[in-house]
Length: 143
Image 1 (tube, rainbow, N blue to C red):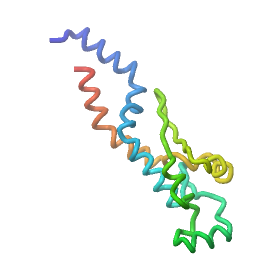
Image 2 (image 1 turned 90 degrees about the horizontal axis):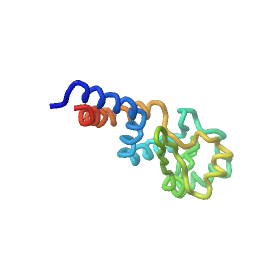
Image 3 (image 1 turned 135 degrees about the horizontal axis):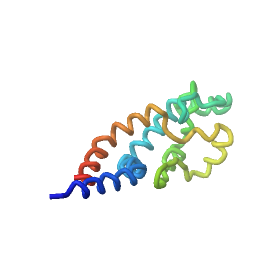
């Protein structure tokens, strides 16, 4: 049986490493996070929940209409290549979204750097997803 000093040491170690655990646990939900970003984009909103602006040109709207794609909002989805290229990069205490599609730089220049990422509401959902795993990790590392 662990002594009280051993328990305190385990708790201290957990506290020292606590900032890395949410990111580690988030990795298990990478595909969900990318899906949230794609869903938001298709709804015409960026990572801050704002409408993606500027609107499509009339020429682009005509093309999208012919392709039976939404014209009432900017979705940044034509062929789907940009959506499929969205990835996450994880650091020790952070993560960020990136895209490998060649159009990304141009899209970012036109529509801003907030097109990739998830909203605050999505972050709340992510916290709820990782909470059971975080509790279990706490138990494993401190018992």
